[in-house]
Image (cartoon, rainbow, N blue to C red; front, side, top):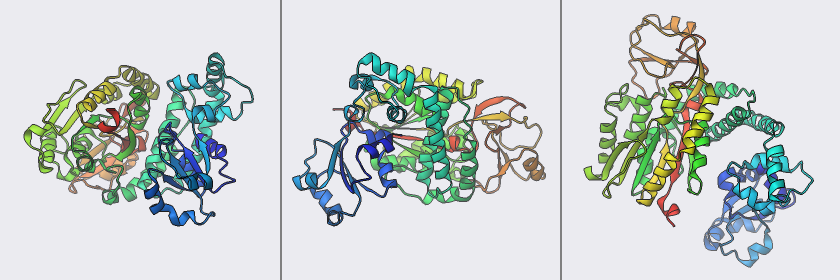
Length: 487
């Protein structure tokens, strides 16, 4: 895979001090620096000599310390560092010299993991445009190469799930799982990743109640801290909420972003992963138990405006709109845009993940989200893109009728009970999870379907949400700064 390929390219097994010139931002896309960290290296992002000396002067004195510097060619790097560190320039041309550079750069869907895996087994030159295209089609994106790649990914993923202890490790796992599901769907390969959900469910049931105390400079961690996070990071921002968008969906729709520079992290949705609960929490900076109407969306705009006012924004500085044609006046400093397309596709879906792959591909090709993002960036907004919840394939196990359910939701993945005498029968009959009520009103009981189950007609294959699977709970959180995209 690419991170192993970069390790080998940089001769990391023979050197403790390495300087990587990465003008093409490979680490932002592939996170290859994680490979160095796994082999005992400390990774330093080089900005200027003074800052670097303050942080790493002591480590430089001992050549046994393993240190890799990530820098740009535009940075001034003093001669003593250039002499001490083994330097490598990471570029398509240097990494894959037997292929045509221009063809690789122009390939719209190039996966560097798949490319490096196939390239290491190649001993021929494919340097013309036609030859490189043939290599990509016949070798890189062959069923055999993809299958071998997914086996490696899944093996590494399962090893990580056995030792995971922190929320950010689960963010990484969620992204890799989505990648496996994406390629398995695209190439019609049977690949079961449900074991990840079993382990993730245990984590949620024991740790989700503590996540609100986690702090990060890179992400709100929990949707209930999204507004606070964006307010602290940007003086003028808009949050675009893609209702129902999972990591799987973002992987497809992000292809339309082209030259837009963004940083991707992730965030935990609220559980139950219903729109009324999680989206209101995202827009209000509240927990579910604090919402005016947790099971209805009629107060959503009111909750958002109230939150913005509490943060110090005046009425004319607050904007709330729906759809891709949303626009705000020049006075607005805090805006929210709700887009329902993904959730509409989810609830109308009858073809499983393959249907989602195809329908999200159409949505990506339309460039609606990317075009709206560019428009807001041109107007000086920092743009944040996230989701209230994701979605997951499920099999219907029968509809609930006459159970005394207090609250019905569109998700069909959970039920809410109050003073219900026969809760234990429901738990046993449908193999439900008795959710611990984290952040929820305590006078209700919350029963949630296991991953892969839903209260749909028996045998119906659906895509839905409201449950506790990693695809529903962990959603993308995208940060796009106007200053980085406006020249």
